[in-house]
Image (cartoon, rainbow, N blue to C red; front, side):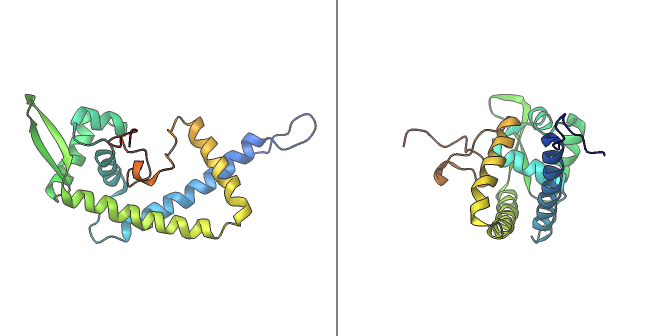
Length: 176
């Protein structure tokens, strides 16, 4: 990739930011992989993503899970079947429509999501501690702008309104 310049010779910011984000994403993927490897129960990254989706959204139909993951329902079904076989997820008849089955995390599935997330959060905190204090505010601003540009909702400041994974908790109420 060649560096582009504008008419006055400055480096194109989009290219520099893109390279920096790609580098940071490699770090975050490595942190995620190490976090998965650190727990006793092994799951693949795609399986963990499915567990996180169920943890975030709660009980759901297979079609919804497939949509959230951006995969075909048949692919989601194979993943779900593997997670059910090892006790991380469960399939139940929908009480409102007996022709539908609903997918949910088991207690064991919730535990692995929490364990992996705890490892990931600790490792990210260790990395952030190495960033100079003056640069941390810049990092927060930059990552917030990046998340907003991607359409990701802002994380509430109140820890009680957070899902364990750091996302806004859909079950949290705004009137406390």
